[in-house]
Length: 405
Ligand SMILES: Cc1ncc(COP(=O)(O)O)c(C=O)c1O
Image 1 (cartoon, rainbow, N blue to C red):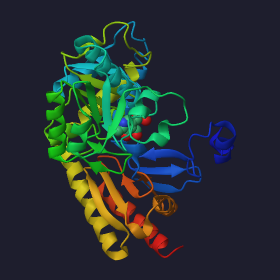
Image 2 (cartoon, rainbow, N blue to C red):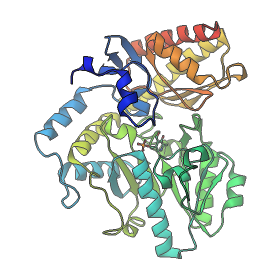
Image 3 (cartoon, rainbow, N blue to C red):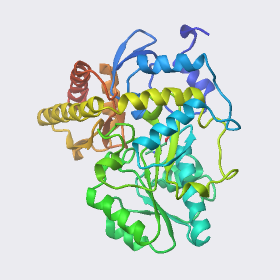
Image 4 (spheres, rainbow, N blue to C red):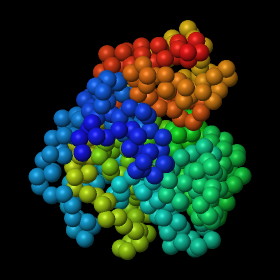
């Protein structure tokens, strides 16, 4: 079937309606530019929801994929493989972790993390230590366990009985968390910056306080770095900036730069609780995925790229503040690195989608984080000229929404 035979209408006739994609269909990408079926060009500030960390079709990724494609595609975990071992070595050399479990998506990495903390608690303290605490508005994926641990019940309601012993506390509120904690607490799971929940960074004191409470109650700390990991915040992982070391960390999205791959990282102390037969995945550690991830991760983990993220953050922040001074649409511009949120002020409450649609119409792809926050998660190496042009288009969109067009 050629491109011309595939239309957006086909989506509605052949796809389960879990998504409501844009009207245009992108067909090609290069760097931070994307073209649709009509040849219209867009600047990509969405980055596949914080995935395309090197933009589209970066030669480093393409070469790694092509080389591996001629070597070995898949084995299953009945055999190990060289790219998986190389990637695991890299992840353990560059983070707190000593052991790695590979998965295919953020939700699966989190599912593994949740099973690990429960099994570790059963092994070491007994079955009563089963309480998992996470945070309101948090997001951890769409499997039934991860969506239950996520902090928006609208995503988990309506599917029958949920996994039990999961409670939600207020983010950045240490007192509220301590009130829920006891020796029954098995683990606390958090994003170091809430992404889907509205781009809300954790306070340093809060994050350090959570670590201390976990230590006090023999509970494990799980950082979901699916969105914040692999350079997104200007550190390799956000925990490094917070100065808090978790017991378990999950990473996905940018890890493969667009190739599906995820990992759960943990320590020598915890890992034995997931012994042979307790967990697994057919595709986890797939050689194609790991070869691409090794190339992406090595490219990102350099001072040049990470400092570039911090610099680009400032470009976004300055421009958004300037646009706000002119049009008075935001109550706050926040976030870290290239996970930037612009919260709409009261006058525009609930209208994030209108801004997004107007921006796409002007030729810039972007995201929202809930009904009130505009979200920017471009490539970590997006050229400054593309930032400038993309924001100029965004400004035109803002002007149109403000004018009521
Ligand atoms: C913090 C966080 N955790 C988990 C997930 C789920 O990842 P995936 O969609 O790859 O399963 C997401 C996705 O947006 C996320 O932002």
